[in-house]
Image (cartoon, rainbow, N blue to C red; front, side, top):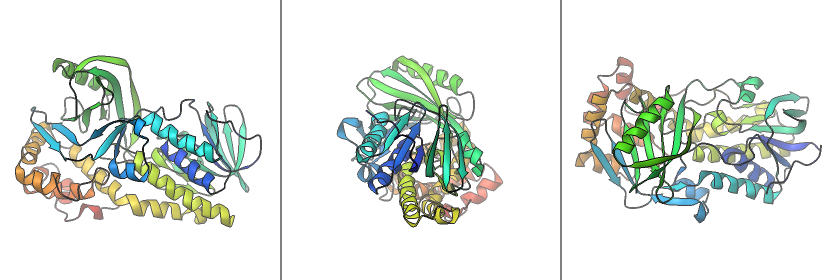
Length: 406
């Protein structure tokens, strides 16, 4: 399905990683007339652990083929440690549960139709700037290009090896496919038992199938086993399919995402929502910015760090406030115990809370800063947060959480 790389000629761009960010950048750059090669260690494009929930705004800007959608999501249930449930029904779809692998592969197919080449099954070991080119060395050979985009995922050693360091905070995700009974809507479980400081989920996909998983800082397999047993005891899960998969989720972005002839995008750059760990939409937006900036730099034949720096300025202008407010909220939530979560849930179930916050017009699946600010300053929740820690109490007293900067 995917063509191999073109001989030994010098490419305009080599993209390391065939995830959503890398494939979208490849598509846009190829459409602009540049020679692009994508290298990925996988043979199966898009086959990366992910729950596959995409907001309606993302679906509008980056359309999802109908046969890649498992179901629409307009309802969700949040379960507190004491078993109290908050059921939300927005009346219209706010997100889509999708076949993530097929969706990501569709970008790669479109990029190939536009002229991009793909080299699969090769792991990039080294990237180095050599004069007016970049040398990209894999397990089997070395490729040459004028520029490189690193879309190589979270924790990529290549990013660290070129001197851009790594993200300062991250968490583990773990997930398994299961057979279920009557599970029609997304269920999110809060509390210390299953996912201390984070949350666990059961997401329906195909008929009678679901993805069950959680985020945690440690002991992910033990927590997943405990969570599965709980769902089996509730007759939600019938049996498991296959083995659990784990992956790393960045909670902070890289301090710098560009250098001479090189840009870093997607999970490799930490462009992920710290609140939920979702990264598809942010990766697609950031990769579009990267493609635009790199196209201009290639046209001017100026691939200096200064010429590529607008990429970082533009993506941070778009996403930085969300990443900062999301991380602040994430750290606040990690300090909550079960009693405090139960108290917040009690407030969240009141009509006043649902009318003012849950069903407010500015509630958005992919943009959380307004919701975070409203929740932190909601009287009952504000009082709970004041008891956690003096530092976070000060944060809770701020009138606009979006002013927190890196």
